Image 1: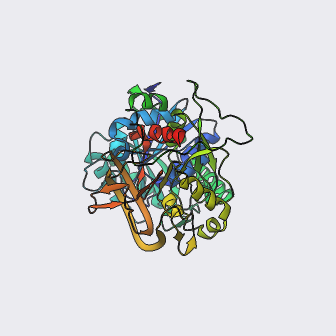
Image 2 (image 1 turned 60 degrees about the vertical axis):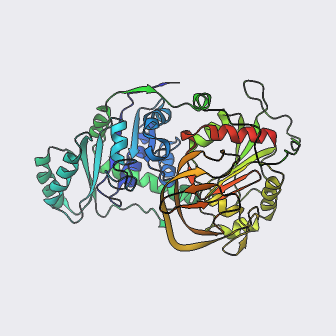
Image 3 (image 1 turned 90 degrees about the vertical axis):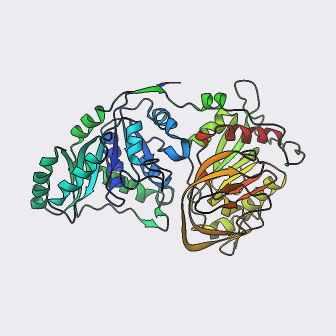
Length: 484
């Protein structure tokens, strides 16, 4: 346990999406890191892609702060967990400053997170089509919620020296200092596709170059010293930093035995690697394979930390490259990503597909979210996948996006029926049928429906969840690994 403390911090926000938040936030992280500062990177909301760029910029794990998925009470503790030992923290906002969960007021908005962190906000404004009106815009954002402190403005897409002079002059009346100016021609190439930016795991050297370019552009155009001073004005936070071990201690233990899962088969042989490592209390650590690589790059860092705290040895593997599961695998976690982009390569790795199917067949726990769901289907866009689920998946023109309130419909390896969790959907694919005989979740927004599959040890669903909100999920999963 550690105190939340007073790490200097600022929130990078904007009036609307597309204003340049990611460029500025990532650029600040890279610029300060290049100057020898330990920078803690954070992202408001459920997005997985931006934190990958943040991690490249800082050399630290990018972490999400989502008041909807985790609850407002966990925002500051999760922030402090990520910011331990850092000199400064940068929190990139989501959408417009005051935009959050639809119909839920300020819930999950950047503004709410800024207030929970007592952090000043720097507002990134796209000034490409504005002159004097920029003052009215900034004034409106400053005065809309007095509890949100907008401490500076960074002007993006400024056309010329003359344009900059006009903008600075008109902003003097607002009393909000201009802490940076980025010119219109200074554009960093960050390729995107159907779900946003292309993840770092897929871009490799190009992503590194893009982050370096963002850092150089922000260092040249922004008042780094003034931004550090603004970050240092953040108010003190009181409380304890989130800790995976303590979170598990305070969560209810999983009910055992596991209902409706059948008799547990014997443990698979450990293999030539020798006995598995043990937990501090002498229990053997169960090997949990965690899918990674370019096709499955979406995972919250806290999931692996909770699994480890629950007694797992978490081993990452790449379904695009590895033909076997990690030695001694007792459970499998497959998060989100872009399997539709790599369907041919995933299909061609027949040995791994068969290994995943065999693992599921013997009743081992398998937790799959979104991309993982697609990978477990019979086929994806006509190409064979693992065949664990009697369902097919295909790309669609329709974007499914939004927060979800969910309740577990069936007893499974993650939760017992009746367990309530909040999640998020974000995909352009369709799985048919959308639910099995024992569905995973019931959701009520945007319409009442059941979705996902609970079959044997498999829990597969489109729903992305954050296990920090329900640490017992990790413990239940690892306990099942030990008994299968």
